[in-house]
Length: 430
Ligand code: AMP
Ligand code: GLY
Image 1 (cartoon, rainbow, N blue to C red):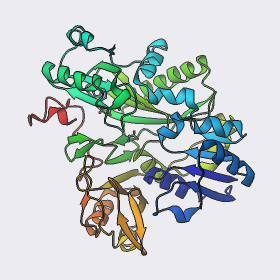
Image 2 (image 1 turned 90 degrees about the vertical axis):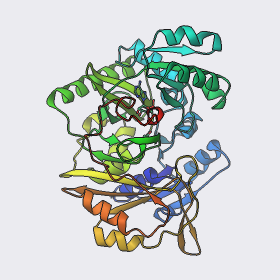
Image 3 (image 1 turned 180 degrees about the horizontal axis):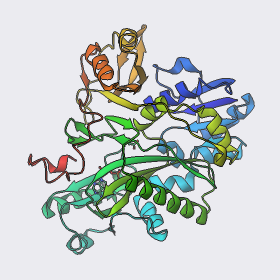
Image 4 (image 1 turned 90 degrees about the horizontal axis):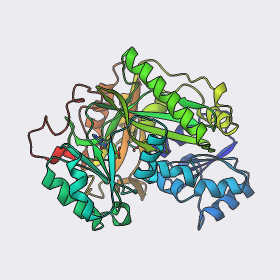
């Protein structure tokens, strides 16, 4: 198979790394890869999706794998479908489960999928009445995509009012002109990433992402500072997950969700059971890095079956132990990451600690690897007792602006409720 992977982060590096191992692969093509993994394939680019689909067809690409959500929402899959190329990714219509929080909430309510109670605000005159219906803390979500920054947990009524005003005044442009006001849920989060082929919903093992910037779950929310899998769950929780998956599958079938792609459920394990925080229609980052180094099955074979609508024939096999991924970001991330700074001794730390490194914000300059983004790289390893190797590798990493959490894999920090346990006046850390 000739395969095209679209996107340039550590998640796409992991997808390329895994697909590259498949005997089914004839040639790998990459669109917008970063310099750290561009060597894994031939780089393709085009003016727009229509053009890219045309070129892909001409050279015999039979499968597109899409990383980031904005391309899905802008309709890349629809263009490839028109050109007769299969894709792993939602079409424009279903990408809205991620692209609009209100669309996603309505889908959940219509299908009895458990989620936090909510109300929509589109005008300042509604603020007071709507807030009267919620306890504090209360969660405010910009309806549209806001580069991962559109969720705000307000710890006081005044705080909620002022942020709602800011949102409506266009803090995130049109994305925040409509707001989902939502009940605050307490519990531990898990990400359940499932593959969907129009008939079968195949969940991968549960994985946990660490969204807060700092160790101990403090500081602002980020795109994710690390992940591990599988998450240990009780039998009861596993049963709940299975029930949840069945409910979601029934909903997708009932609503004729005719795409082959990913449904990522952000879930909160609350005292009242599992509740959905959000849907993403793509692989998670950094969850994917942890999942793919732990997956034994040939990923391209899975994708091939999925695009043939035969996911029911796939049996997933996983390695022994647990898999961990620690993100190394640039000091100042997420607001003002320091750009620049050479990453000197990657080959050495990989060899010394037997870790796998996936690149995100890096650039090659005169054969040197330079950091140029917020999240710079992911250091991953799977097995038994492997966290130490990852942290040893990061300690040895010669990159002066490195910032990372030192508690990826630690579970005691969850389930406390972010407003109550800090006492820092830190606005729930969001
Ligand atoms: P989202 O983009 O909707 O996943 O929100 C980002 C993060 O905000 C989640 O991963 C949670 O940590 C937090 N969050 C979102 N919704 C809620 C909620 N209803 N209650 C508590 N925390 C939430
Ligand atoms: N790690 C969270 C996400 O991919 O949205």
